[in-house]
Length: 365
Ligand SMILES: NC(=O)c1ccc[n+]([C@@H]2O[C@H](COP(=O)([O-])OP(=O)(O)OC[C@H]3O[C@@H](n4cnc5c(N)ncnc54)[C@H](O)[C@@H]3O)[C@@H](O)[C@H]2O)c1
Ligand SMILES: O=C(O)C(=O)C[C@@H](O)[C@H](O)[C@H](O)COP(=O)(O)O
Ligand SMILES: [Zn+2]
Image (cartoon, rainbow, N blue to C red; front, top):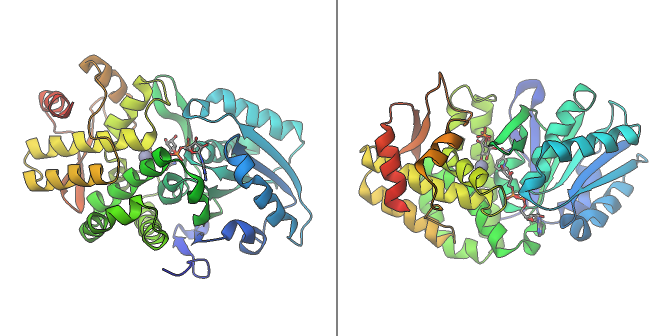
């Protein structure tokens, strides 16, 4: 597939609409793609991504007509640094550098960097411009789009955050060449999610192209990124603040977030936890006769084909419950679950017998 750079996808949110540029080599084109960047630029990245891509981004910024004052903050690497402590350090850097409200925050990294950068941008001086430059597959297809920003709390994922949209997203697909196998596979979990909740034809395409994707075939990958971003943009445009349909993007996350928090962030990647959580949700949906056994088998088979885990860790039922009760979908004290109703559609329901949930977890463990 040709570069999408000349025809960006749009997230349609009236005055908060923004483009998603997708293509090879875009990190070298930042000054052209983002000509509106102000003089003060804060780059949030981490100690793994900086040696790989920071110089390229800085070189690209230096080619702009505007002279920039660039301040870089490097987080230590890991999900455990998506924390209030890191947030405070970022604030200290921004304030220490005397940045003003007309600065821009650029997130150069995966979902951890992007979520923290977005939350910092939402809070610094009550809100400054924010740009996503994702470097992982997961960030390309999910976290860079849609404006959910947050940090974790020891008791639950993303419990402190804001809805805050970026001004633009620039996805340079070349960054995926340096990703570890594990992080690459993790991104595929969120790609599969879009097929299950929204697009049966995309799910079938993923089944057909799983081997190519795992081999990082660039045409297949660009197609998967573009289709994932298009679905996410469509859902977010319908329901920016998750009052309804956006909750479907949370498939597998009630269980996945419990896995991540219970293992103290880092032992399981987000994508791995979502994959195992999606298998639990699908097993639950099968037990409730929402999907057929054949649909369940297809979901498990694709999860495996994408190199993702299908079994959760062994956690006590009380542990599952304590984390799930802090899920942001809880309403009036009742858990709500995203469950597939077929390949290509899903629903959110609180009408679930806890014994069935327990059994659905035990059955796949
Ligand atoms: N805001 C949202 O809508 C949303 C959606 C999905 C996930 N998330 C969040 O995103 C996070 C997970 O994101 P992630 O999977 O990108 O994890 P991550 O940011 O931890 O990145 C994974 C690993 O890849 C490294 N890395 C990043 N880019 C690289 C590159 N190009 N080459 C080599 N290594 C690279 C990172 O340093 C890290 O070690 C979680 O915190 C999750 O909650 C948010
Ligand atoms: O964009 C959304 O909406 C999502 O739910 C996407 C998820 O993949 C992502 O992990 C999100 O951060 C989870 O949101 P949360 O509200 O459950 O914290
Ligand atoms: Zn997710």
